[in-house]
Image (cartoon, rainbow, N blue to C red):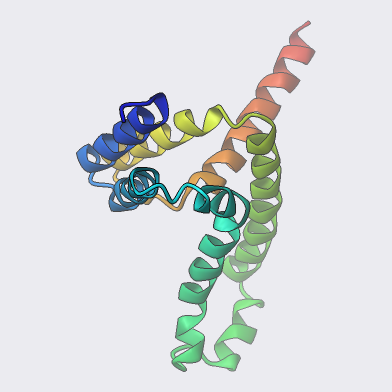
Length: 156
């Protein structure tokens, strides 16, 4: 019952509760329930498709204002003609590129996930941040590691 896997998930649950991060706490709770109810066959499916499903729901939430008619096509067109709109376009393209690099990094070094989630919890507690997920944290980590590698190569 108290396997290493369950203890790690319990730590995530406690960290999520302490940081008032309902998403981390709920995710850890669901995974613990899957393990305790012997529904572990679901875990590989979540591992393969969980990010896609999560991003689907995130994208749905972002598109709801369009579905409700709260944002007009005219407003969308005008946004491309403003400096903040152009910066948002560049920011979106750059963020998705970096998130892809971060996801690749996590696939290669999955042990970094614990540090990413703990770092996200610190960001929530210390700076009142919004936990948008490990994917963005992985993208930022990728950039930090790339800068550190470049600086260390330059320094030699």
